[in-house]
Length: 185
Image (cartoon, rainbow, N blue to C red; front, side):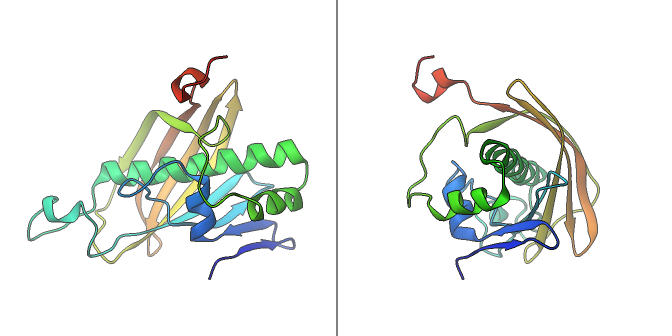
């Protein structure tokens, strides 16, 4: 079901897989955030979902006959979720009300447009992996915006499977400079 859901009472926004895909610049096989389960706008916190399929392309090589989802890809999924938190928070600040964010999300074009609004890169990661992730797992990704200034954002992040913490730490994200998008100025 493709839907954007606003729960004004609990103050969160849920974003379906199709809209999530429109917001992120990554594509297969690097699109790792499946959907936004909840963007808690007053807390500046984003909960995302990554489903690890039995057919995930990384699993045959990591490791044959004993597949474990790669920690590097968990970091990338956490970074995409943190980037979503930053983008949604920026849009909220720009329009001033969560209803404006909902309106913006419903008007997104079918194909994503790379812009300075939706491209953030991982500048630094300080992540500790505490438990392995196996095929068939649903990873719950959490990112809480701690600091945002001058094109940089710091997020506390955590990944859980069935309530068990598998990774946690801090990510620093940076806006991609205009020159890197082929634009000057």
